[in-house]
Length: 253
Ligand SMILES: [Zn+2]
Ligand SMILES: [Zn+2]
Image 1 (cartoon, rainbow, N blue to C red):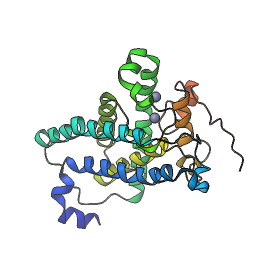
Image 2 (image 1 turned 30 degrees about the horizontal axis):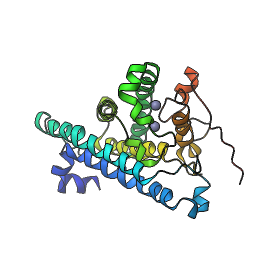
Image 3 (image 1 turned 90 degrees about the vertical axis):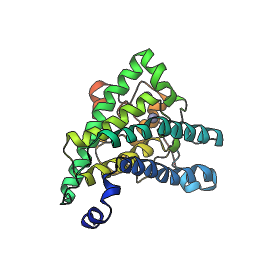
């Protein structure tokens, strides 16, 4: 597959716009199933049972607000940044060999771990220093019951920082382009899942054993108790810094 893409679509793959399009399209596509769950609400009891904060469904105005913030940020910040790269960055060479599955898995996991560490520090500081919180991060805490489209309800500075790490980290870790794109899509998925508002049996936190991974239930707690669970994905940094808080709702079938 890599040979086919490399030979027939090299101009598209080398374009700085390609990772932007991959992340934006995967974001909206991955939000869709969770949006469907929100729209159906109590009409899908089997799904609704997994809602972390039942009764707190997003309204059309909330969905429009978050979509508006996302489009505004992408038009004003992400697209100009991609266009600037087009001008000053030399064309990216496409490696002849595809990565092995092991290289891909290790690369994606390494990028998630590195991002988790960087964002933990950023997030911790932006909650502890009031000026940073009010100026840059408060917009993400408008909604205390998260829903998929609230993932990208971010201030410009937060989006730029997150975008810089997701672009630079794979370069620092010397990842193959396929690994980089795979990481970007996985990262979009786990970020959307963190905010989806549902704790399904197939949530990443339930698939990864020993409570290593935080997932939607832990990030939902962060939106209700903002001085806990600062790490976006894994739970080790919050456990080390004493900011870890468990999901406190007990549901009976
Ligand atoms: Zn959040
Ligand atoms: Zn926060």
